[in-house]
Image (tube, rainbow, N blue to C red; front, side):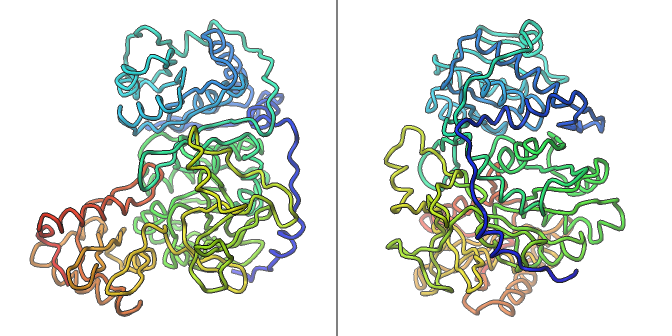
Length: 570
């Protein structure tokens, strides 16, 4: 690849925010594009291989119908409307409909069980929910103790039969009776748009209240990480669930904001299917989690030899991409992965843009234009280059203007909101170092760091090293309590298909992996114990749940249980 000119200083220094007093996501992402009756918005690929195209005009008309129907059911401005839907056009329609009313949407994952749903529905005080027919059973169980959840609108699914219960409404019949015109609520940029519950590492989930203006705050990072999206004929796809920030704010809404087409698929992620989907729909831009990229890397060594790929930009976030995937993408996909960092409360604030400034393997990038980001120490002082600290984002940009990306606060939790800030700095809970050129190097979650034999251990670097081994598909590193050393480094390893060792072969493979890490990292970082597992515990947003494994090790230590056979200590 040709050398990249570094335009970062000019882009970051000259950027200015323009946030209008009135700003409505439904208007800018749908209504304004609906004037062109043939403009494609969402291409749906069904699991049977069939496809259908939804235009902006169709989304807009159905959003108005649903808004009118919800208004007739008593939904008012400020009410919370839950959305329990996968990647399908009705998801976008439900958001736009609620925003036409001035209501607040609350996206919820289809993977949530009754308890997870009940907590969020009760805590938010949701008055209505738009539900996929496949999720209706779990929502019904959650609803039993929620008298405030007055109405369910059920979106049909082929092959799923259901009989309406009191307060339940069929999507098709409801919209058929409603008008397709609606005067929108006079929405302000600072008005709340959506309530997204963060998974968190300790305690119950917290609802982050996101304003309409936050989409504006996301856009510079989106444009940069997608190598100056949009270009003519750009098509976007991501397997990220539209119920989470990554799918909603990093894929669906910014694509629609620019009037381009996004591909929707509700099936499970499969690396070979991902290549095929990108080829069939001429996908040019994508957001892929590091876990997905690792699976694609292991599944197809030379994807461009078998698939007609048109990818020109891929953003990745959620975990560290690592040098192995970075190099593979450059060689096998012909592009540089633009790693990005953000979180629900302050999203899309740091990252790369490989066509405008050089990306460095292993770095999460530089602050995107419009954002003032620093690495601060425990006292809130900016740390010098090379010193590990916490990533923090300032309320104001480098010109002193308010940054629109910030959330409004945690829902009904002023104490948690206050703890998030250190003066004008918003702490992320993520660690990094900053080099002299302003690149940030991710050091993991503050609560994922641990000490072993007196050394401070960050799991990300060890996991990335393990994945470089050809037999390793994924890995997670956690501390294992040890009476003498406090902790030892332990790795949970998922092997590539067909590589599972027999009991007799497990010990040699453990030794091989330990030597692999020891030869590349510091001597104290190699895993003293390796346990082979079929899968790692993951969040619905594609992040490894190290906390689950950490608690498992603590429980084993208390009970005196040994690791399973085939997972010997080194």
